[in-house]
Image 1 (cartoon, rainbow, N blue to C red):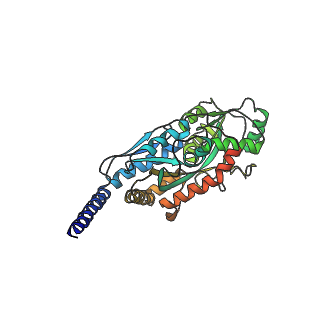
Image 2: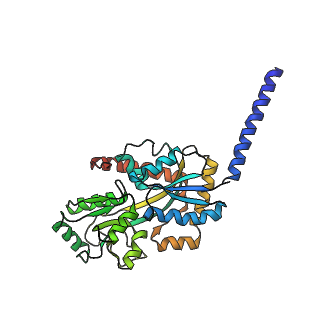
Image 3: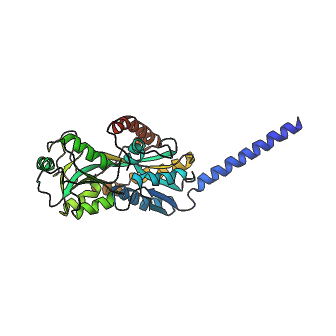
Length: 328
């Protein structure tokens, strides 16, 4: 009896010790730099938001926050690295609709998009613009569609990679206009944008945050915003529906994820840090100026991001598979 009591006492002591150690770890997190993996090349739309937030997170969390680009295979390489990382909150991935939804329908992945990651926070979304090289001989969307139909064999449209939002926007454009033209897949939005600016490709869709500065400088032509409403920041650009192409809508939502098994306390601390940053008036205005749409507070919870991802997978996977889109 005495022996059993002693064993219970030891077990309780050890259990309390482990709990205390875990609690202490959560309390001191973070104690060294955090890495945010961006699974695309530098300079693209997926690069803008995490770098803006990293600036603020350094001050909020009291540690360096490093943004590291790990590109390739439509973002699957970067996600794979994070899936294999230690679940301690020091390695995150900045993902979006393509990396956490569409990739699962077109790639054979060595990880599960739902089971191998912990949702951290839903980040602001950004509508796409349809733009062309500045020398394209069209003044509005109707003229552009006519030009597409007349020059299908010669037109080229850039995408940020197979399975990305810009890829499916291009496929949707072909479907809505009854055209077939070559798609040029890049290893990220940055390289694709550079070729659009230099006139090496004719068309591309990208997040408004990336395109607007070049539209305003006259470096590229914008024909439509692919959203239900016009952009507050660029009211002169019509929606695709207003310009004569109803149904042409593309919006990319973003988020932070951690490896599966990351302690809830750590996820909560990361979530609270980002949510507080997104509530700062100065930052909100900066994001609005970049055409980002900030979700209500209740949609920024980890559970809300997880629910959104699962709902989007259920909606889009049958559509993508029916279109027979394959990884290259």
